[in-house]
Each structure stands twice: as structure tokens, then as C-alpha cells.
Amino acid sequence: METIRAAIIDRRSTAKNDEDFIDQLNMLIKDHGDVVCPIIFTTLTSIDLPPKVAKKYWFDVQNHRLQMIQQLGRNITLTTAIADYLQSFTNHLHKSYVVDAGAFERAVSGTILDNLTGLYNRPYFDETYEQQIALARRYTNDLSILFLDIDDFKDINDNFGHLAGDYALQRVAEVIRNNKRESDIAVRYGGEEFVLLMPNTACVDAAILAERIRCKIEELSITINDNTFQLTISGGLASYPLNSLNAKDLLFMADSAVYLAKGSGKNTISQFREEQRRFLRVKINRPILIKELGFEDHHVFSAESKDIGLGGILLENDTLLPLGSMHEMSIAVNGHDDKLLLLGKVVRVEEITNQRFNIGLSFSFKEMAKEASNHIANFLKDYTLAPHQTPHAEPLSH
Image 1 (cartoon, one colour):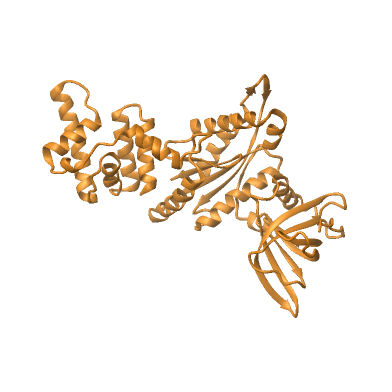
Image 2: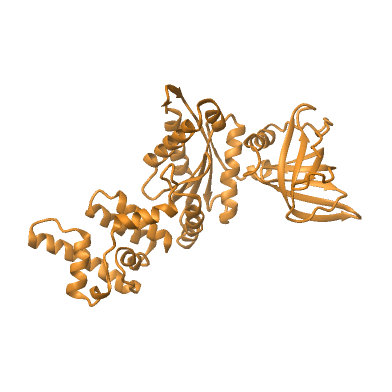
């Protein structure tokens, strides 16, 4: 309900006029069903109506407005038409009020919009995404999700300052906003990451839109404080039901495809494919040093890595690690001088022999350096850990 309410407010703020607003509300009804009708009235007035009654009132209000325009020979706002209809044909007006759409919009915007870019924020996406998946499942529609990540964003902040970084985020958001369709939901997911949720969109159409956005961003020339720079973006695309029927898995696939795009040279869109399921995990057998976080004098011990993927790593060792504990890991790649530092949470513990355990850790990308996640993608792409190499892990500080 909150998602539809927010959509009504959003369309109120972007509509060219009342006719455009009414058309957009009718499109919402077409897309989501009669459940939209009572939300229209609870959003614009204090009235709480059953769906069937609200549907009748809504279309009656539209006809009533047209009749008023014809009789009076001037434009009648939707607000006026609603108030006049409620007073003339129902007994609801004495307990209703018409909402100041501008004030309500400002209140709602503070909870669902990102302050810097004006796109929807992460909490709004988390709620909307599950609902959109449910709608796609219910009506057997396609749905695609595009993750976008600005390439080398840290370099922009380091070289030109954080104001330049903020301005770059705003320009990228502007490109996404100007190129998405009306039904698409654009989100600043966090940091330099964006998400575009595309209901009723198959993978081919989503890929075309994703590529158009990528090209537009590549064409940007950003100038701030006499400094001019360009930027690029990498993207990962996954589609329902083609890639997965599970909302969580689909999200992971799109996010994983971003790292494959990074590993392919950046400035590209990677579409998740079924064969990437095998590609996302690679068997390895390398020494690794591991230390539990939060304990400065905690024991540092060695383990053997068994496989690694974009989501995590599987280790074998003789030390039982508690589920949910966080650990820092160091593994050597491409010889002694190239070390990969990882952060992970224990999500699986399995005793394979007496005092010998398989330990599964999921990577914590939020806490881990961006370079580490990109390095994993490069490793998975190029298989840089050759089986005959026997590098040693770099010691962690005690």
C-alpha cells in the first residue's frame, strides 16, 4: 500500500496538469488493479473506502469534473471536482479533507527519496522490489533488474574532491532518470551504486535500455571548479523468470554480473546467463590466513581454501569457527606480492572428519574494499590462481 501511495504522490509532483495526473492514476489502476482506487482517496482525502465503492467514486469524479468543465466553461481542478462530488453525491464530505499535495509530497519524499540525487532510496527499493516480484509472479509478467556501478569512483573523489563526486552522482542519476520509462523505478542503492527496476520488461528490452544508459553516461563531460573529467559505468542485468524465480537470488545475480562486467574491462553491461552459475565459483587449493575480527590479540591460524566465488569462500581447517562470526582473511594471488584481503561472515560449519571442518564464509562487500570485490571478479574471469602455484598468504597483524 505504501508503495502505491508513494507512486501517487510521485505522479502528482511530476504530472504536467490534472489531465496528465488523472491519466497516470488510471495507468496505476490498470497495472495494479482496483486496490489503487481506495488508496487514491486515502492519499488525497481522509476517506477510507472499500475497493468497489472507491472504484465507482473515482470514475464518477472524472465524469463529474468533465461535466463541470462543460457547464462552467473553464478548467476545474481534480481537487475541486473531488470536493464537489463528495458534497453533492455522498455523505463523506463532513468527515473528509483535501490534502495539500505539496506538503504531503514533501513529507513522503523525505522518507523514500535520496537527498543527493532525488532518486528513490534503498529502504524504498527493499519494499518495492518484493512487491514487484510478487506482482510479476501473480500476473506471469517479466521483470528485469539492472545494477549500475560508477567505475573508479574513488579516483574521482581523490583527484577532484568529494563535491565533484557528489556532482558526478547527480549527473549519473539525471541520465538514468531521463532515459528510463515511466514504469521503471530508479534507485540510488548506496554510494556509487544505482539500481533500475523494470517491471513488465524482458531481458532483451532491458539490455537495450541498459546499453543506452551506459552510452549516455560515457558521453558525459563533467566540469566542476575548472576541472573536467569523464566517467564510465559498469552494469549487471538479471531477469525474472528467465534467470530465477527467487527474489533474493535474482538480486544476487544482477549484483554478481556487475563484478563480471568490472572484470571484463569495465564500461560494459554484463547480462547474467545460466552458464555463469558454474563460472561464479572456482575450485582452488591455496593456503590462507584467517583471524577473527574484534579481537586484537586473537590467534591467527592457517586454513586451506577449497573454492571461491563472488558471494563467498569455502575453507577447510581444524579450528571450529562460530556461526555468525566475522573474520579477516589473506590469500595470495599471482605470486607472493599480490595479496587479496577479504572480510567474511561464517554461514556454514560442517565437520568432515574428527576435528576437521568445512567452513563457509560469505563476503561482506559493504565493509570490504571495492578493489577486493573487483579482484575477485577478475580472478573468476581469468582463473589467475594456477593449480601448480603454491604461494603463501601474507601474515595478518596480531
